[in-house]
Length: 344
Length: 264
Image (cartoon, rainbow over all chains, first blue to last red):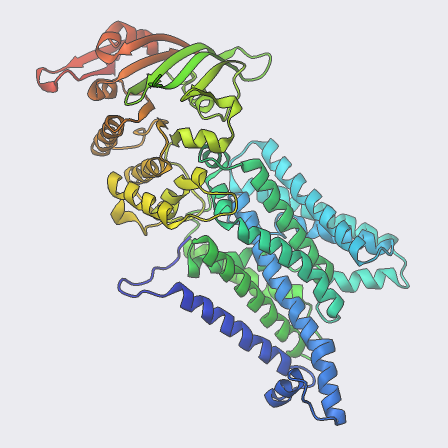
């Protein structure tokens, strides 16, 4: 999917672009540390990070803010962004469908249902994560099987089936909320579902980081082979790929990554749809480059959006609301720009 | 003993569902290295099913397919792909791989599980592109090529796959006459280079043009086999396609014969 071409004679070095992305992400992290209800100067940040802050009250406050509040939140945002984007890109390739994404396939809602059910029964973090994974897997599996039994090659069919699953699991989430104890459990589930990183702590960062890093590493290792799946089952098999095993691995990884993001950040839509498109647009289809660009752009996007969500107004705007407000119009713009040529 | 038989099909039967009739009924064929076989047959004769069986994508009910002496059923997809390359009908692609990336994918069977193409693979892919004449399209997205260019890119991919047997499914079906000629000439070159090549087509004249062996498939059965000039006469072609045909021949056509439907 190439929306524009590099003019002839201009050779943009891929490595330079990569370095550029990393530098921008680093700068973004510093900015995110600085801004907020309690602004910190770059000097304070540098001193605190190097462990040389002044022993005054202000220094101790800065240390608390950076290490207990902002760093965990930044790490969580980066992992959520990278995880959702890589998962979206993986789903798009496996299902040969540029419109596939964790939320449109129903994975996010399925994982949300699994997680809220686990919260209802007061399961520990690991249990919540496992339940989210199981719910997400059930949703994407059901959507895929439903689309397959319709026997239509249209890209829309899978998306429709995904939306059906999404609606079903949203209803089940409502059911869980309905039966939840209004004194404690209901509030927990409701706030978490809004999709906010406001309470992200080091534990959350670790919860999301483990599956995202593990799944991401596996998908990165298989990146070249995964591209074959975009050719379709029979063509990939005739080239010598073990399609069933490859597809299973990719779906398991992408679903685990999505479930992990849902566990800490609730249902955050649009990221997994938009970012892979932008990455392919700007960096092409070369598997390694596309992967790194997808992860970095996803991290940048969610980090930036979360910065706005927590500092734009006196009350926090839920992250999921922000990504939708930015994502929906941008997506329409993309569709108009490509004039739908590769979508039918 | 030197194995000269590249591909051997023995008594192949295939059934789509237990209660259905046989889609392929006792098909037997053998193909030597350097030989070109044109598979002719009306729609629904079982050509595509046969191709799928030859690629190991469909499991026959009975019979065997042996590629260079090895039974396909005992081989992994990877081992099959090292023996048999497939050129699909140039179809749809949701993602804009460049021609070079697409041709590189032909190297899949030679690359380990989590590996990426090596420099040698890239070199082989580049040579395949220049052999087929799609070098200048290297950086073009596959989705923006014309039908003929797509077909050539897919053939280059099969060449990069470096398998002794190449199977082409209606490689000229959506091409204009100029591109048809280009693809047929390439097939001749590939066969002359020692590949065993099978193609399916709806145009018997291509078999004459290639001076190839033909196999006529109808209702899942192999009804005739031999050199085009011996097998393809007006009567046999009319019977194969179940319609009255006219046979066109020109003194200057160097033995190429074409068939066209007779209208009422």
